[in-house]
Length: 396
Image 1 (cartoon, rainbow, N blue to C red):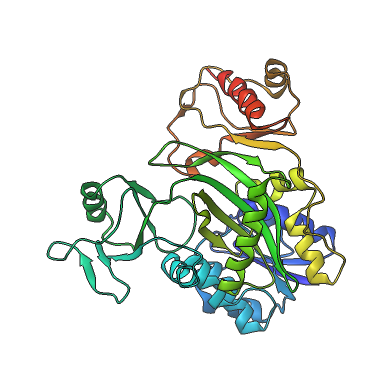
Image 2 (spheres, helix red, strand yellow):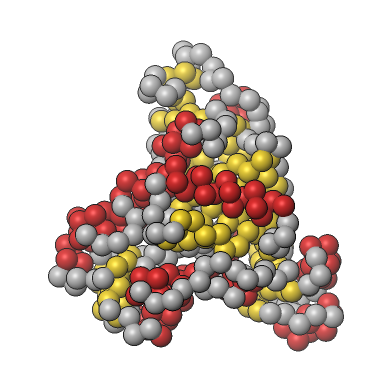
């Protein structure tokens, strides 16, 4: 069999390796000729993945059996367009648009009663109502929105360019600085944040792992760690039932999914949902360690007509923590030193921090991911937090 991968970043390497283990030939495309995945694929092509027509034509002669999704942002729509044009299984372009266009995503779920907050389009630094008319600006009335509010790019995914605004004055200042790109403005729902990994097959939605986030303080709110949520916890069942409804509302079919959820007073609230696996070493490391389920591998088996399993038999109590320290680094512990100091054995450890390096405060995922991480298994969240604090304290 042959599969295509659109977007051959470092995060595609795991999927390529798993595919080769099943004898699947990989044709990979990326606009960067030095993308790591291109070098590992059986056939590689340097193509701008934002150009749907070019990608379709490049793959037409390759005749892949299906597309394997890897962590990707706005150009998930290219994958949908390829599936539509070549008659391949998986997400359609329409599905991909609902995942990557945050305003249309909100409208769809809001009308179904699955996302209750006020949300507006922002274009040219002006807030628009649902009909495209200006409702905030130099001569327009103020948008009826409560604070704090979230201002974020309309297209794509992730924490890049997200503002958490405490009042209308800061909203005005933020609007003045984003005149070029399309944004959305929505009310902030209070509560703890979680991440969801899952899959959709012909049998419906399967939840694989629910992850509780450890975020930096506002306004950045970047996740610097995740804790697995056990199957017996009440919120696990609530999220699964809510996600089943959200996936059905968006019409998602036969794909991997990754979502961000808030545990609000009224129950789960979906921040974003995308038809692709999670990045940041979650789908390829943390989720398999917690559940024994490798999303990429199980999806390949599903596509090949082999026996597959997305339902976890159990979930281990684990944490992945990224190195979120800041300042000039005077000391970097090795893995064994950190294990001895904390009295633990890491399930995984990767550290790229160098002595003398100047580390800036965490501002988004890109500022954090190149540093490394460690994974621990333990009794509960408090125990894991304590050990993480010990490890972080070893960096001087």
